Image (cartoon, rainbow, N blue to C red):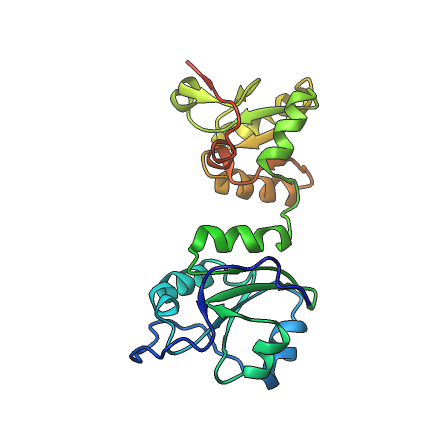
Length: 235
């Protein structure tokens, strides 16, 4: 098994640091539990390899726990103590801690070494999360906009739209969508709803889909678009 180009972290066998309590609620699994807890689940599993003597592991524990809470129901987060499960650490070629490894459909698909934060952890697991019906990533939407195959529909308030919006976007306030469905679907190309963070248009898309009117939306909203460095029209 490859080591995924892992680098960084503390080498195994590092001098033992003073022991302290782990202020998180991430379950620690054993070698005997590995198959049941990591290989069998249908959802992605994020596995953290750590040790009691690992100070970076202790420092990032609250952030890892917060990430696990945020992703509850979407992924499983578990921990392996390399001193208590040395065989597993050797089989997976763990060379330093902390090491984070993502498993999807029973196999390792990504790994990184070091005290990474929630943003990096989300980047690791996101490709393996189930996509909501009608969801488009910013890069996907940008390509469709360039090809004039979609019309972005800004559902924020009029003032926010006037300040900045996606190229070629039309404005239709979120609270007006359900009463303007005919207008929405008579646009010159497929409409794609977006809001600031994506949560409101995702909820609207789910509601419309349940009523038999599917519509696409921008996953992560305007914030995701900006984070990709994609163009914004400003006035």
